[in-house]
Length: 477
Image (cartoon, rainbow, N blue to C red; front, top):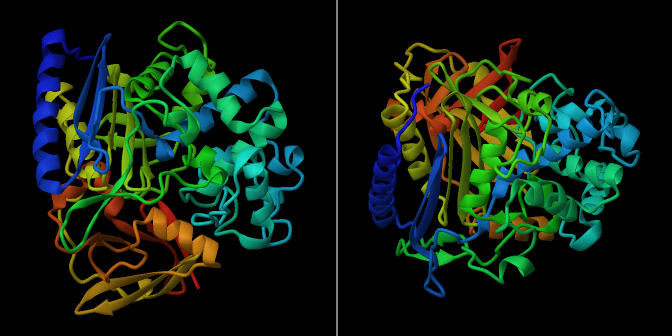
């Protein structure tokens, strides 16, 4: 195990400061904040502006929306209840939550608790945004599934990144503990981990320094603040509402490094449950979708595994990475979506330069003479249609958002900064069933951005049944 000495971490601090300033200036990212813990030392670096409307600076202790990083907190909460004997991973969810149902009769009955937190549940609810507030928000979400959302696949059969699974898990926690999800998060995670700067609502966050997301004006490239700070309360357990600081996420990451014991010495999770979250629960065996643990995505960088989760909020992006083999935690937030590239660059630099990890090239060459016909067709998931055709010897994808109603349309449009349709995207084959967006250098995909690759799965009778983009499945119509 390589250990950075104190001076090495100061070097890292200077490098991140320089890297963030250069990247943010050239890519119109107003503000960025990042932290690294390594072998007993930690640093936090803040750069730029937290909110261009007010000019408030991004400070080391500025709060931000965790986004989907919350999913690791929700999973930790579920496994805490397993430790307490209140939940069993192999019990059907409906045993605890009888009202849980999907549009297909009986489909929900097959989903086990473990399927919710390992993204193997098949619930087709990725863009389902019921707009409910307050104590009954998660109850309203679960009630809405029965009439709005079906399934993509049989539980355990495939892997598809699942917001719906995490929200159902949040409601499940409320039922078995008798405590509303935001209160449970504060009581069982924030307090024992020592996340003193974290909150679960905009009302709490407004009382301290808090960043807001930004979208770039396509004409001027100026960053404009989002018109919607956060997603509805219904999305809390998937990442809609929790807010906190870099120091808080470092403390949470350190708790997972230390087998479930927080930096203050409080046991938050059993060593067994902490280890279970790191074990592979499903592997799609394709480079663009890393193996999935519980809560954590298990990114392989050569022989080193990085436990990771990134999170999008309206106009912002966060990341949390834990590297158990090297006693390291890295976390960051940028208040424009382009910051994900900077986060990827810092992560790879930490791994290669400071930990001496050899990062292998993920995609070494492109293939020629791949038959494209099995992938042509229309694929769908909740409110999303993807039309795949062959144009000039490449696959071309056209993605269309098809909102169910005006409320869904309004929330998604705000979340996407007003852009709900993307220009057609061309893809070139790496091998049968695996494609890269055209025009990208191959080294783009070595790190976090391997998620930009697209794969097709389960070819039957000369046609692929599923398309996977960004870890999310759509099914052939």
